[in-house]
Length: 502
Image (cartoon, rainbow, N blue to C red):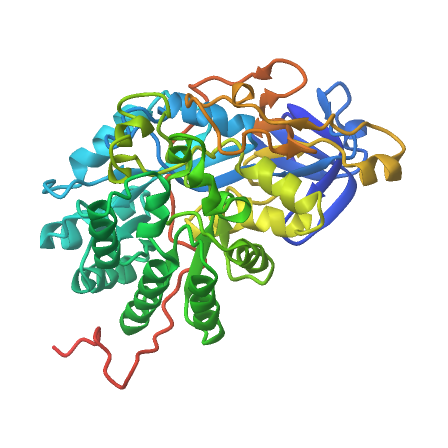
């Protein structure tokens, strides 16, 4: 094998992928790519710089496929600079954010150009865009989306709620036809808008305007019904879909049942639906507003348990942060809603804490295998969103993106070397976002990313300097078709709505 130059060798690595755990390995990196895996590689390339993993898990860099950055509807949220800075501090090397079309936008091109302007030269990690579609003109469906796909934007997000964004069932079917033809990944925010509006009007009329009323206005059944309806529409159209940020046990059960019928239905959940209940919205004074998000945090701890179970039994394909923050102590942030919960900006900060929370709360506790952790946080998102040729696994030819954790107690004992991380309780001041709170405040962490490596460059070293990368490190990723989302060619009856009758 002809190797011109090796820039870095990771030694004493316990390589973790979605399928394997390989102890005592070395990883040779050159020109930003993984060149070789094996043992004693340092003897082949003497004098090469090394990084000692001390037996700790070396995982593919995280792919967070649901992140909101620099969006107009969140003026106090994270910029591309602050958001991606927090990403690498939490082990994430790729983020997929949203270029959001307004209802009045007649073309997608200015929308995408603006998001390129906002992100270019401002990203600490690699990135791509999803398109949020709200105005489905024939020109956009027939002419512009094929160009977007050609230019590497291979996914769309559709809303069944929120007045400025929601689409009718017929509109969903129309966009399904286009995304099916183009091979675009189709994401859906599934909540019943009319139920939420009706409940909201009743609550406000009775003076229930506090943050906890947000959870009352968005009951489980609003998500459950819309999830079932979205699955039904996708079956009619024979289009694969991914249902984002599921939170309730019945919605997860709808997905699981669809999967047992071999429908191409995928789902995502988020760390806040694994750890928090709606009790958080009852915080002292107005502090419950910090945890206002949609779907709402659920009342029943069994919903949380169902989310954990869904991670293990394959109901959930990805775990994303849905990082959609607003500052708390700001008149345009959460405090915009002091008079009524309907004015509280939706969303939580979570980009930096996504991987550490799932590692400490899942892998360290034994609730998740390290392979399942990699699958949910990196490998599956890469496959789902057209990055499977370069991201999401550790193999020669792939980008040299890694997150390296401290050795666990078991690894230290087995290797008789290295040391575990000193456990700590999280404070917001430790994080690298530009938000004045974290819902994970005071959470106990037994581990945290020790190193983050982006295309061969160490961009995060927790023990020596923290952030080592720069906002010029990130590159826009032109994505391909999903390697997961393929229509079945099966319809609900003998009629094929796509059959050419000419």
